[in-house]
Image (cartoon, rainbow, N blue to C red):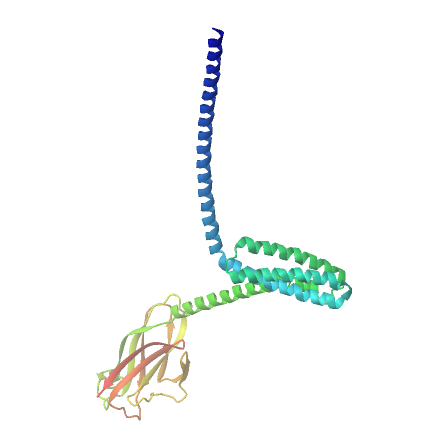
Length: 319
């Protein structure tokens, strides 16, 4: 009887142990599955951040490239400063040369990164921190050795920053000057007058103003036209110049002193007239009296100038 009871007790113990193991195994399986999912999420996030970091490095590649070049130049300037300090106080040559070796190592790091073309912003920033640290050490030597600043070394420490600011200021000034020049040219072009509605030719007499196409009948040459409206052009009294060129290329002139400076150079003109231009369209007629001249048969060209610019042209033919 007692033996059966002991057997039952053992069975209960075994059953309890089995249940405990099953529950433990299930718990561990659950925890392992959760940790596996968490690990997958972490790996996905890490991959995402790596892609982001790679993209940032790619985007900043040109910037960090310029920065590394500037750092290399700055380190080389430090070497030059140390050379001057050694010349001034040879007793500190050992410690100064030790700093030069550290600077040369930084230059070699930069050159190695530049050759690999695979450097990151973080690497360049670390080099920049080294630069600031070495610069601080160099300042202390400058204070010790060149306290009177006879070599102007303290000023040279700020040369790189000053040069950078000066370059930036010059670039901004040049850009501003270019923008002003472009705007000025646009205003200049926009303010130019123009002439249209031409009616040019020869007249039989100045009194009757009867037109003719016969060269031998012409007593007067004329051109009538309209100067356009332009709200941004300068207003006031303006001189309008007419140039008539004959078939043989000759420019007819009332006076030999009729010479005009234009945007394309100096020209001769035939006749001129003053008009009161108030930014509105205005009709203008200019006449040239033929006196002892003989007109040739052929094509005649009329060019109208104002404010040193050619504002319109026309032509007519005499038989």
